[in-house]
Length: 426
Image 1: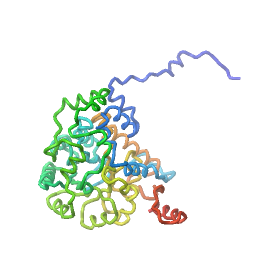
Image 2: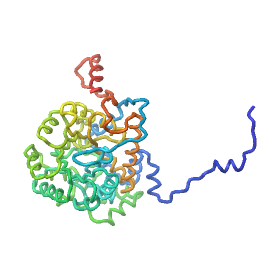
Image 3: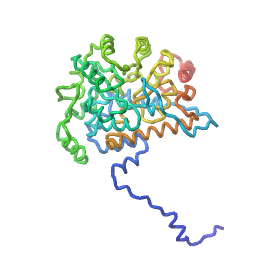
Image 4: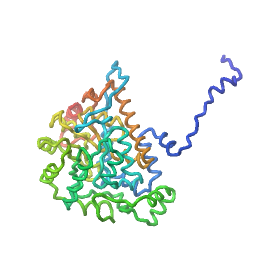
């Protein structure tokens, strides 16, 4: 029989420990966010639909984005046992300089539309964390403004080749003069992708007040207050605005971009140059043979060509063909620190996060970006410890298997399994 007694008041008080309430609403909601998905939920609640969907959405049926995220879910880790890793080193050397973590902030356009602190919040948080920050050609903060926000950190500049070439050349020169150490030459945007969410929402630059946007703004007055009481949006590369993002891109970008443009940009840029938007093995080999400092496997976050190759699936084949010493980086679909660890294990020297950064920004400005970085850092460190590795250099393909879901047709089912296993171990 269980022996029962009246609770001892002293023992009862020991069990009743109340947490001190957090009066800062922003800090309270950010502390409650344990994953990037949690930050996305907060961001969606606090941001008007058109602005949120611009960040969250992709092109056409959004298959490229969903497949990229699915690819990271379809992996299997292989931990080593009895390999203590009480401390882990997450630092890397990338493009001639250090990064405290194996990821940096990707370039994002129209960022102050997402949250008024915009690139200043991203650059400041990146500098504090010791990781690179990338400013977009279509950013809403000037090159000099980002440098002022992150004076001692690593700033990179993403460049589009525009119809008016002198605009692009001038931006590259300004970035070099401001001390940006790397140019991210983007090659996957000759024309704009069909971003259907933006069209359906009537999303324009600058945002227009319509009955729909007013109704949507009612539960989010803080966003409109910030937008209307802060300096007017300005763009480094656009002299005129007014229209959807796709219309603005089509008016500015040049579909005739070629390798000749790359040679011109390389001649005027004094620092490191990487090519963003590479989507096959052949182009990867050609670019590395041409002597660029690195390539970024990317389908533009699924925002350009829908059904484009999945960068994470492409990664092992590219690394095998160009050599493990080449600087191959990756973006698109990264939502967890484990995604970053898997990418490094399969040969990526570095990764970039875009939407995760913007979810943090929309959830809480600079503090939200800092929370995003902290979440990914903790996930990276925990995954490394559970794998039994103490540094990123110890990660190898043997630690990860890519599980096959999307297989090319044209061969018997019996023949697919060995091929899938071979691809997974490559």
